[in-house]
Image: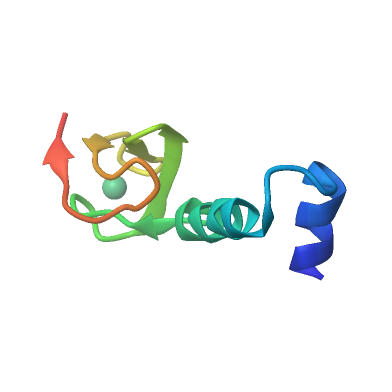
Length: 73
Ligand SMILES: [Zn+2]
């Protein structure tokens, strides 16, 4: 089902490996992550490497596609 979505977006273009990589990256940054500041699960990716907690409004610099190690902004 998820594979179908990628095929719909990219058709036969870009190759299998890179389409799989896009899908993997998107699943890594999708959804909400746990906030290191308030401990609630409310951190979303707002841009490349920029993450923000919707509860306490703290912004974090972390991975481009992963919310891992955090530098507080
Ligand atoms: Zn927070």
